[in-house]
Length: 455
Image 1: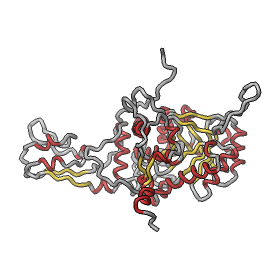
Image 2: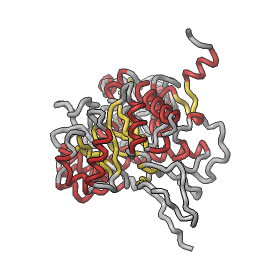
Image 3: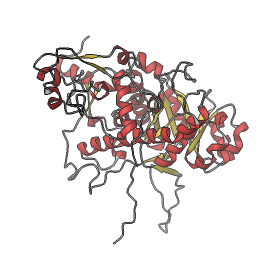
Image 4: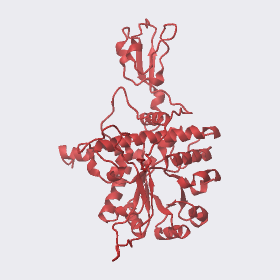
């Protein structure tokens, strides 16, 4: 019998970067080397290889994982390994050099990174790093891996949801069922920062969104005709004071995002719905003390999506900002009994694969990835609305396919890691993970439980 569904699959393939990172390690071989070649046997990564003439070639530093086996095995002590200072200059305290290196690997290969030297970093930190996954309630993990027979769904719904169904005396449904859109991954793309080749950057992003069957946000003023073929996968972001100006774009979009600059929420919602009654309306705004109440208002007046955003620059200064923001909005909506009415998307601070399920556990339905995919294309971690003048991100006309594939590979690797988390928890769909804080352990809570309140 033929299956009546198509299994979701992300097609990854090698996509070498245009802009290379400096190697993490500097590997040196000194003059006292006697060509014993113990290092070639000890290194499983290909850093030390013998040439055709029988001599050892210069170390391939890009392949080094820092396991130090070659140093330990060399009988002459002729090898040293040290951290490359240029590598340590990458990124910032949040988008650290190691995180950038991981993003590069995932974008190039589409595979889950594995460290041969094991994990040598701290086991907790600030923000998302203070959350540990709890796999203690596993009912039964998947029998044959994350891509085996027992399918794990990563699909989520965007839009409003009914709290209950009503039927008439003839058992006919009378409830007005709101429109929802399903995407196969709980990830959308936030609008990129502007650069000298912004048009190609947006085109690559649109093509990646179309291939992944998700959505990419594009600022309405930056929308161009070359994006028309991918319009079904684009969300125009329109400033709340400019909705009338972009009415034609509103009429042809599945989702319209209003960049909320004031509190006239109902007026903006009515304008969009008047132009396109079938469009889902998302409200985008930065987190502040009034955000939970604003989100509740949006839920009650008929908005479809709340896109909560915390600038990466703020997250760098305070990694707890995005974690606390998601939890605050989700908890407030639960208390007000309006949480299930809307979709909550969180954006900002998404620097690695684990941040996706952690955001969802805190209460988000999906995340908006911004800086991570731009790092995969060469960005040195820029803040604001424009890439800095010395940022190496440049996409010429011939780079669009490469950029599209690297974005696709990144999300493919992140989805595989999401599947691993879901499988470890015994969950068969990511929808069940939303707001399940019991599926995680919080370092602050554990510390208080063990050592008591610091105060």
